Image 1 (cartoon, rainbow, N blue to C red):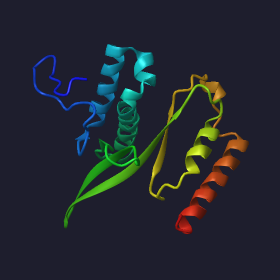
Image 2 (image 1 turned 90 degrees about the vertical axis):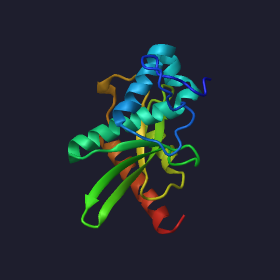
Image 3 (image 1 turned 180 degrees about the horizontal axis):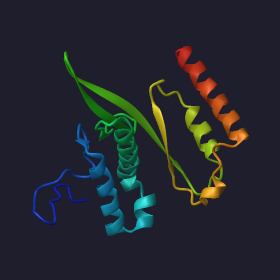
Length: 177
């Protein structure tokens, strides 16, 4: 791995892929970076190789940041966690107030919905059994190639399971677990 990569166009030294420590990036940068890896290494390798896990997580968080920016008419930045096991990524938004700038943080736990699991709720239930702080957001990256009409998140059974998961997670956070 090149520890001092340089831009192929201008030769400027870039941040190595394994050292995202304290770097907040535009969601566009996170998305373009993963797209570039896909083009250079192939889609399948970029999608599954463990060396690109942080880039995949940043890519998914980047799309979420863009959606939040559009919905809330503000700007969100992506930060990849490199020291602690969780969260995987953070979204940061700087709010200007009369008392100074306030940094709003959204901790994101990323989970891949793999092809070998048909039911997304199984993935969500497994992840929610872990003891995450109450302010974490779970971001599911659907790597399962089911057709759109096969994904039925709003059917009655899944709604009931989602409520049960929510209550279980809520109960654990109130008991201090």
